[in-house]
Image (cartoon, rainbow, N blue to C red; front, top):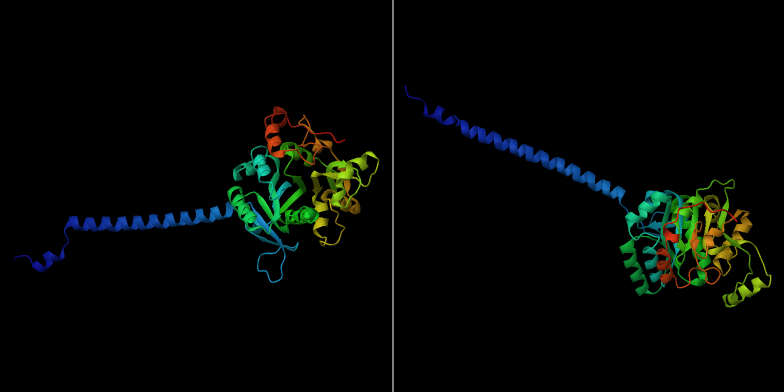
Length: 348
């Protein structure tokens, strides 16, 4: 009897069945690979979001009705690491700068302060110190636009919502300490000007010393006459020579406050204490009222690079380096500034 055509056509050729199996296997492998790739990409994206963040941050005073995240210190944060909690460091160094100091910042980034995020991170890991430029705001839109470009390029700023004016330096300084305390969990908070040559390794060694007093005001200390009127500032050196003195306080180009001291400043209302025209005098008066320990270290006001100098500037001729854009680069070429071993400086 002949074979049934129906039965014959119902069977698939062996070669066709193998092809179908191969296609199905390929599709399964391709689909599984795509699923795994998607998981890896998602994990990588989340990891990058957690590990990379903007170093620059804008800090403003709390405003009624603001929906931005607010700290316990009455500050509002946006743009950057404010949302990740207080960053732990041994010391936070705020380099006070202004809109007319673009050249100074360029020179600093070519000398002791790294110009890239990786360099800043390496410096922080090596010394325990974090560095940011501290600047307020301007009514000049062109200035704010240029600042925005610099922030985007270097990402090394802490921006304060306060007018950048010389007459408001005490207010800016108080705003700086409040913002720094809110952002960084630090043993010391250092105020430094943008026209000094600094040795971060030696500053780290100084701040790391064990101290019996938890409230420490560290700087190159001086006594001198108080002139609240800026027009009389020219008379200060002469008055000093004539013997006029007042309370001990640190020179303005660089000084440090311990965490306990800054915590007390943070608790102050902006109009709680007297504001002098000079920022260093203002801080000195507050330190006297708070009965802190004054730690004098002349290595913070050295006129030249030595085996123990920490901060170099042209004392007493200039409050900082004279012609800092040029002088910073010149000092950085000297082995005594860059290559001499780190040594603990003795307190005077």
